[in-house]
Length: 92
Image (cartoon, rainbow, N blue to C red; front, side):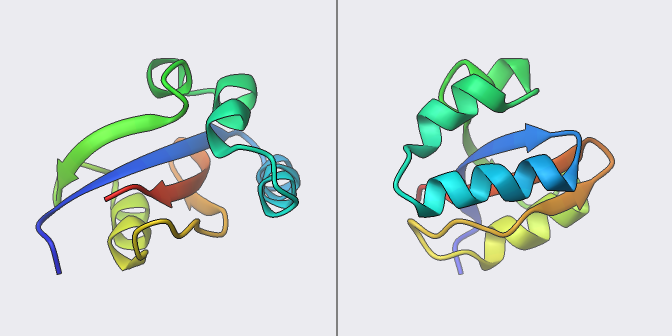
């Protein structure tokens, strides 16, 4: 397993919002466009959800655990953290 991975995410306040966005992704809408439109993370949201590269210990635990389990190109189910609900896409 790599020590450094690259992910994008979409952050929303409610699980119901996250599930709706996940359905849009599954029906073919682009992750980056949905991140720009819906993510409450103003920093990464403007960059299509791109968080860049990070290592273990840099992100909140629930996010980190989910992100490091994903394969490249894989998208997570909604993950709850202290910030809200994340949909994570592993980039590399």
